[in-house]
Length: 620
Image 1 (cartoon, rainbow, N blue to C red):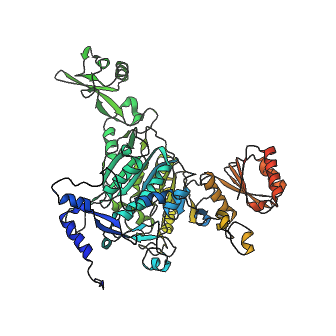
Image 2 (cartoon, rainbow, N blue to C red; image 1 turned 30 degrees about the horizontal axis):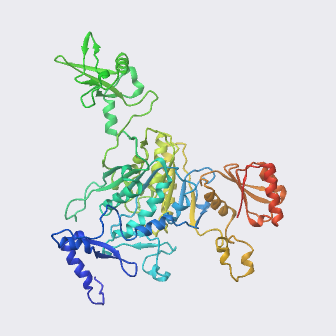
């Protein structure tokens, strides 16, 4: 049933639609006087379309731009005064785990992680909203002041989280989506290691724009591949045109890539197992590859005979190995020589495993035939007793495949893996699966906005679903494999700063209740809340071991033994200060109110100069 507009026809938009039919290339997007994105006409291009001579105008240049690009840069660069608060009651094995689950707007979270995880993330996988016209996108700024209007219109949820629909009726504008994703990618790039890579799932709605945007953010030279992923067995009966059975995964590196390798698939492994070598049983079979080549530049040192049964075998052009290497392989029976009517072929044995038992890897391909979305649905239904609580989650094998890649010849099974659109927490499932298979020690950081979960009402929001999925997947993997891996995770939640406004803007202090001046810290915040904010400020990873001790009735927090020691109690006596200094902390943090007066503060500084001169002292 269509709703009446109850107003006259918008002739401007009707005329724009007529122009679009004739000249679709002149249609663009712009913002109206209210800041709303609307369809518009590029009149310079329209003039050129209607002219048979070159129309003079603004100087042309190659660039990617859209209404909101400057706002995206501002969104990325503006600091946040938010913090993360620990949620121990939702966590699993808090004291020992190195995995993190963070609830909140991922733009805020990425900013908060800048100090602690700068240049530390090995791989990022994200599955952002596709801008299909039916999904929500994150909105980073609202001009409207009425919160009631925003909630009624679906732009914020019951938790105050800011969302905005981008429906088909709104023209499915690209600009809002580009502004949203651009600021997040810009910050995420900073978190990647120098050899780090990012994988981004997307479909046809935004793949072209995303490719250009990633060229802009990461650099076109760092583009690795646009992977075509066949994600469905087939289409539904209502399909009118082509059966759309694919999506894309864009892959970029932070710096120019030297090499990337992927585990062999089952078919490839079977090929190796067809040929067994009794001399090298532990290496798991082999395939053969030609040792002569016609494709390389002429290299005279690679032209020489191989003597076999008294016969000189010469390459047609040249060998790919040096004489020493080829002769040694021949002596070790690592060469296969065939004679067909007097014509010899020389091939090397390429074993499935190297001398240390490590499986050979191969090159990833740009077209993936599965795993399919149906497998992702089956996987989550098995965890939740036959119920699908999310709707079309990615199969964990897909993400597991990407996370198993070795980059620049590094085959380490360690590192931090980030997913800041984590949805049903498939990435955590993938990391645990992978660690259980190969004994790795990969760690994950998942970030998810606590959106209302419309698929299954038993979970208030998607974060509750994600955390429960991790718990159930961990239980299942442990029961099936018995692997001794990290099954836990620490939960954190984005919240306003622990500090009162007066802490940030003391110059704006006016007439106020004197009780408000007694502390610059909010009354509902704990010592652990303060500790987390201090760790973020100091650039300490949130997975570091934390310990709380009671020293003469005062609560003292230790992070990674003596990397950081903090005490946020009132009026800390000199005897406690001395015991803290005796532990030789790299950093120590107190509250202003930890000292009775200025002379007590000066005395603390003198004590540390004497007992631990290298300690950095800070005060809240």
